[in-house]
Amino acid sequence: MHQSFDTFDVDPDALWGTTPAPLEGEALHVWRMPPVADPRCVARLWSVLSSDEQRRAGRLHREQGRSGFVIARGALRVLLGAYLRRAPDALGFEYGPRGKPMLAPRGAPLQFNLSHTRGLCVLAFSRRRALGVDVEALDRPLQVGPLARRVLDPVEHDALLRVPETQRKQALLNAWTRKEAFLKATGEGLGGGLREVPVSLAPDEPARLLGDASATGAWDLWALEVGPSHVGALAAAAPAMPARAASA
Image (cartoon, rainbow, N blue to C red; front, side, top):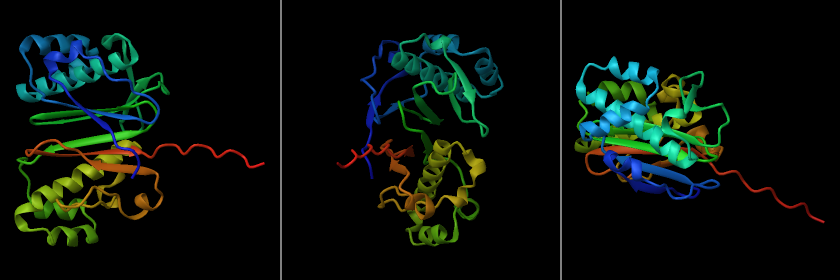
C-alpha cells in the first residue's frame, strides 16, 4: 500500500473561511462534512451552483435530499475554488463517458470526487491521482441476501457467509463502498460491474482489492474512518514511480 491521505473535518457554515492545506504532488486530501446547514448557508451554496445543478436539485422532491445535494455540490465548488484560487461559481465541469465529473477544460490540474448519504458528505482531492470515494449509512434499509447475490462474486459471497450474521450488513456495505469507490476512480461507474471488482469485506480486514485489480499494483484502496454510523472507502491510482537514473 502506498502513502495514505490527510483527513479534514468542516461544517458547511465554515466553508467560506476555509483555507486548505497545500495539496502537492501525489498527496490526497479527504474532507468529511455533515450535509446539514443553516438555511442561510444553504441559500449561499445554492447561489454558486450552475443552472444545471440548480435544476437537478429542483427535481429532488424530498427537502432533505435536495438540501443535501445543494450542500454537497456547493461545498465541492467552494473547496475546488479554494484549492485553485478561483471563484466557486466560475468553475465548469465536463463529464466522462460514464458520467464521472471533471473540471473543464479537461486536463485541469485537480482531480476530485464526492459522495454523500444521510448524515455524511465526503469529498476527495488530488493534483495528480485519479480517485473515487463512496460512503453509505449503516442504517440504510436493504435485504442482505438478494443484494449480496447481485454484487458479490462467489468467493466474496462465501467470505460474507463466514462473517457473523450480526455483522453481515456492515460487511456487505464495506464491499459495496470499496467496489463503487474503485469504479468511480477508474471512470467506469456502476456500469463497470460490481461483481467484476473483488474486494475484502470482513469488518476486521483492511480494505484490499483482490484479483486482477490487485495484481497490477496500479490502484490503492482504503477504508475511511467515518464514525460508527457509516462506512466508506477511497480508491486512488497508485503514485507514479520516479524514473530511474540511467546507469553510466
